[in-house]
Image 1 (cartoon, rainbow, N blue to C red):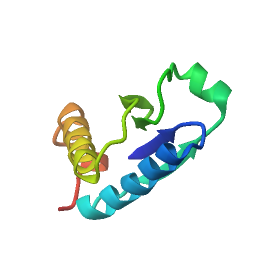
Image 2 (image 1 turned 90 degrees about the vertical axis):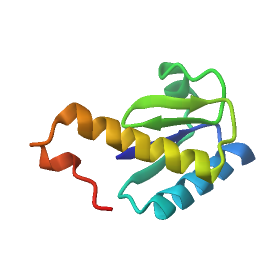
Image 3 (image 1 turned 30 degrees about the horizontal axis):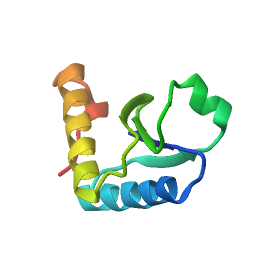
Image 4 (image 1 turned 180 degrees about the vertical axis):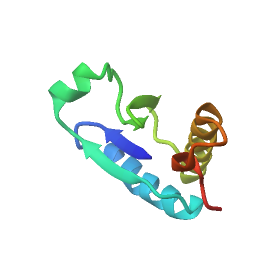
Length: 97
């Protein structure tokens, strides 16, 4: 899973990134966490309020500072939805617990 923190680089954006990395560890999932700070890229993605969190290219949260617990839930639900959408025969979506 690709997790993108979308924000200009303000303290709230960096805190969201820190919490996202912590949530990945707590959830025991594999994910790449990146931080996009380019204003043009943010505008092109339709981000109006920061920080924003995108999962696999889709904005999932915007304009608030999510807790680690909220992020863990968001990540697990996203992976579960991706697994359901792919079907049981797609080994690329199997999540080791």
